[in-house]
Length: 119
Image (cartoon, rainbow, N blue to C red; front, side, top):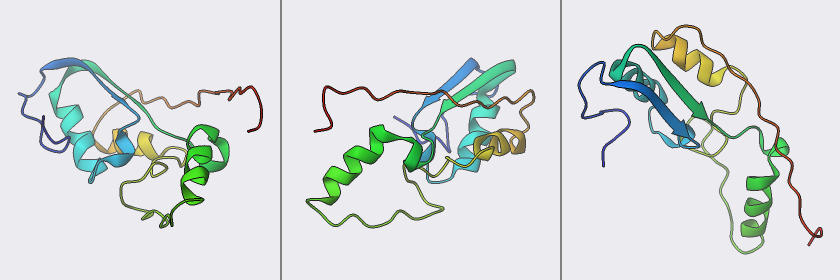
């Protein structure tokens, strides 16, 4: 195990780095992004997935609403690790560009929540 902001790998080690729904929980997202860029080989690819705004994300919003019926849930620190920290458009792209990455593309992936009933 290692910290995303201090990877134990040599420079230019990997063809790709993938972060699936973890980016928003790194204490220092800019330093982690710089580390990902450092360990990528020239021409390597960095890909990440992050949650969108709560009102557009029933998967996590429904779960958090259920938890809130049983416990007091403090509002998240706007700049600290939390599920929706990276939700703003271009947030992650700006991190990538700040780390010197090129040809950065960002897009939304639509998801449909289907259940048997509202309950």
